[in-house]
Image (cartoon, rainbow, N blue to C red):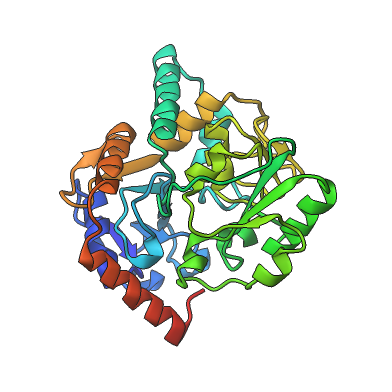
Length: 337
């Protein structure tokens, strides 16, 4: 028996799609899970001491190839990850993904699949949310071009993974101080741009530290035109690695500490050097699960990319736009952290 704790009613359909092999029980509070059972929770929403003795807690979060559109706008997911130790964005403790990366040795077949998956993602201009336009971005050819991706400053990924730099403005200042002659692009998080998440508005201050402030261009398109990515813990760093960009991490995202990035904040649990194929295979094949949110059919990551690429060419559904407007209204009235 498995229990799903505290999820909103809207997301129950998605939970059921990822649990086709069993029928989960939905409860509101951790205390309702009987001793000896398994509880699934979103992210790090609940303290461990709220569960009864011998309850196995599994943490769930969006995967790295999620959807066409934002989760905060109620776009249903194609990918989630499930972690029995911690969760990939929490660098304060081990996770299943970290254990995989510390131990996994790829077979030749797995290596070939990982490289093919990398190429498929890049060729399809695929990212986590796949929002924004593919408009070209004008950058100087005679300067180092750096992308600084903004994050939602209240996110657990910063609280649990970036002990030294914790705000977008502090990150921008640091990057500018270390690269005074670079062409720096700042791109705020799409949830913030859409008015769905709260984060400090730094547009006015940012102009002193960046050369371009962009909001509406797809992150994949931007990545193709920069030389480096500098980030706290953003998934954009992983997406930069997929496109063979140099990545500097000021926090401890799951892809740092393995010899693939320049790190200013070491993680002593990450004990070996790996190649990019190992990172890709562990994160996208072994760690994540995939479904078609329309049919509920279980998919491979390759099939998920094909599905999202096809969906991106289809006209936007009126219901999707209505959900976005309602979520924006809700965020303005009640706030959303």
